[in-house]
Amino acid sequence: MRQSISRWPSMLMPSGRTWAIALPFAFLLVFFMLPFLLVLKISFAQSAMEVPPYTALLQYQDQQLNILLSLESYITIFTDDIYFSAYVSSVKVAFFTTLACLLVGYPAAWLIANARPGVRELLLMGVVLPFWTSYLVRIYAWVGILQDQGLANRLLLWSGLTDVPVQLMNNTVGLYVGMVYSYLPYMVLPLYAFLVKMDRTLPEAARDLGAQPWEVFITVTLPLSLPGITAGCLLVFIPSVGEYVIPELLGSASDLMIGRVMWSDFFNSIAWPLAAAATGVMVALLLVPMVWLQRVQSRTGGVA
Picture 1 (cartoon, rainbow, N blue to C red):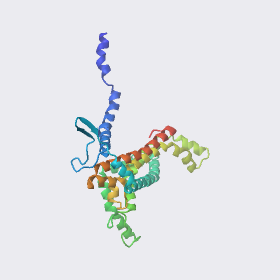
Picture 2 (tube, helix red, strand yellow):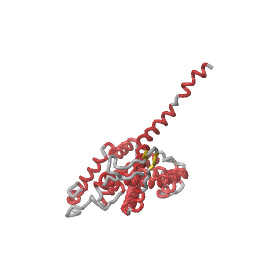
Picture 3 (cartoon, helix red, strand yellow):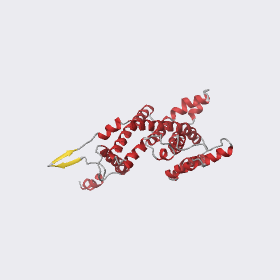
Picture 4 (tube, rainbow, N blue to C red):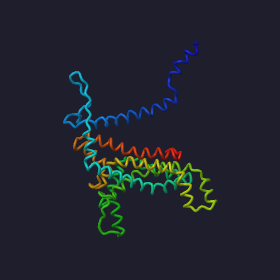
């Protein structure tokens, strides 16, 4: 009896496994979920000329607690053509950015995964190295490269390919160059993680059975790397939809993306509820590829 009583404190204390799971979830709750819930709360308020620039959702008056929810911002989002165009443009840019990253990143990941161990570490370092530098600094570096007097135009003039500087930024070219450069590592790393773990005997067996190299890739390598493709595409597509810095610095005024519209609503128009509603709709829009990921995982049995 005394032993069982003395064991109660240790039984009530969480185990190490519980702490290992609870702490990351607590971090996500505090720094991710709570800010989003705050943004969601603001989206149901109305703009006001006060600090903060939106009305309260709860109002206590005459011994009554009133809940004041406004759908005005969401009605504006679904009826104003500028938001529809911004969402369509953002999804289009994110789609082609993801496609370009996949076409470039898959061969790169395959090369790294099949390289000798010493070379493999060097190649991985080349992929990870840009993360050691500030994201904003890297984008400004591309401004210096792509501008009229930048390195790219100097090389074109020196080689004789053109007599006048070519406009490489403040247009679609600059936008996609910056997007693919910034998000390519997010495609390469998940693909490498799956390709490097692939059973090498399976492609060899397919070749021994007479399969051509392209048939080996289609029937063996590609299906086995599908979870990595899915993870890489989501890691590129989701943040690309809400990108603001690259369209602002390298894109043109016609590249109307939802990130630029939300920034304008927050800081120029001071329409916080409208910007918050645009954020909520964007999150709902991004749930579609997340659901698709879950279905792909359930069919393939992979973990992305």
